[in-house]
Length: 200
Image (cartoon, rainbow, N blue to C red; front, side):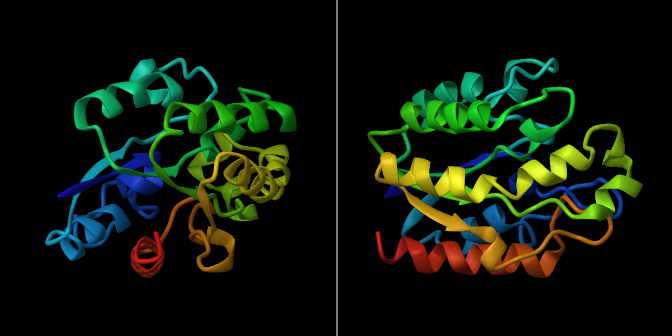
């Protein structure tokens, strides 16, 4: 049975925007995949709140994507990896430039280049974030940078022969915090990934 690793941040983990808890397995998109694909794939959920992709997170290795990803690869040896990470790198504390983001996502893709890759380009951050709890992490520049991530991810995917899904074409973040997804959006993401998997 082929293995799929769902690697990413709080939107893979299933962060609930209204209370900060975790969606149950049948609500979060990676958990939905686990149930719907159980006859054909082993789905490994590897989401983590506040995990960056390529900026060194002061919270440590588990929260820094490029540092912890090799451990997941060694432990599970997945055939397919779904990468949904990078939005936390836009926190103002990291001051990431466009070049930093380009170099960073390519660093992630280099780690998994010998596998089938499905890269999810993050949804843009809504203005609502500025009046939410996350205003202590994200600012107006974070929102601006989120708008050019799609082009960066699509270009990187082409370079590494990966499949890129622009989530902005299908889902929107919550009006509560402008960053995370409501249950219906998780369901849409899961259905979209299943459709794409059939084409790989």
